[in-house]
Length: 196
Length: 280
Image 1: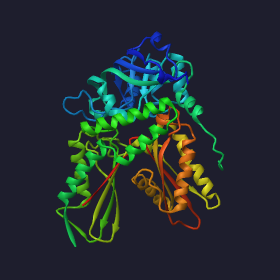
Image 2 (image 1 turned 60 degrees about the horizontal axis):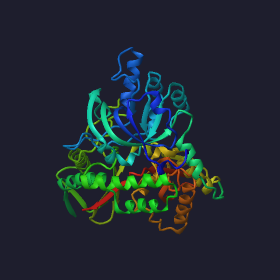
Image 3 (image 1 turned 90 degrees about the vertical axis):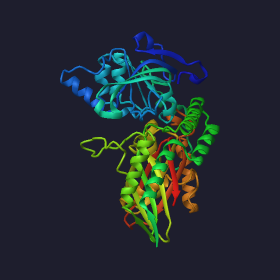
Image 4 (image 1 turned 180 degrees about the vertical axis):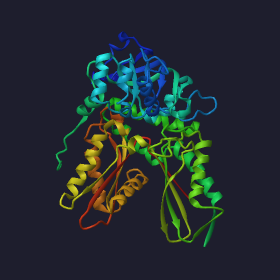
């Protein structure tokens, strides 16, 4: 890990990103995201992949954008969005390179990404951020506006355009091959010398 | 014979859905607070702080602790002297889920078929396991089971020769393989013995035990302590960012099995561990 990230001031970033915005980021950096995030999870990714294959337009141009893997709960009156923590990102692994090749600069989710996705991220310049699933109510408070922009029939799985402020994430995979899940585990693993 | 109107079951299940999804049970909160004290990684402590803060917000604002409001799983202990009036208990539980998830702003997370994958829109059908017991009581325990951690669960059919050492390895390896995906710190349910499906059911039911309460069998309680130590030595830590608190509790349940068999099932529950009971 790149030092004690949590003892530093968080890095503040506004999405969409340029490559220059994400180049300084290092695995373990604590980041507060503001700006635009697009929600998409399993079913929306399947449709976007089909759209690409069929030569049809995507719900949004991926260039510079950040995708958030989530399916929010319904919003109570007065809330922009219901609780919305990240879902397991690996289920999107087979789709993510399609968006990364088209300029996607960031993804927010939880859990490890495949080697193919990490390679695509390094090649095209895209960062993977971790959020904490069990903070869904807190994360929803950072969402100021939410609007369904595509695939409304998918309900919670529709593509939404979110406007967020100070949305807390940690850099898991930076542009230089770093992986917080691997480095964190190595740093804290202990040998306890049993029959294993 | 005691009559219970199914309308009463509907109301109780509706309330249970909202309560379980919004307010973490006290024993799980205490386990998270203990982990916060014990965690050695600063980033891990930060994760635990945010989980505890989220618990306060979700409970006071009556919103879901986690957007994955899960499979609605129920363990029903049904006294054999109970008779339901006004409908079937299965339909009453589904109606309670329908109302609880609808009125509680809880996400419908169930598709009607794994192949066609169309959302049922109300989180039904519930998954219900019945145990028939003596007397005229009725206890309903709900487990809100998120899919991210359920997906990382596993079952193996060991041979008696492979035995307990292989069973321990399998539990720890399942957690190492899950890594960050299962959203640690985990509650770990382990079922050993029985035929294939019994081990899996025991592993799931073990999750509803009060956090860290040891199995009454001293040998199994020792196994729980040993597994917890090994799991926390993996270094996976809160949210998988690295740390010393990968699991909050390990609950092992055992059942008689066949002379040829040693089934082991591991059901993982994420840091959004949600379970509550109600007695009618």
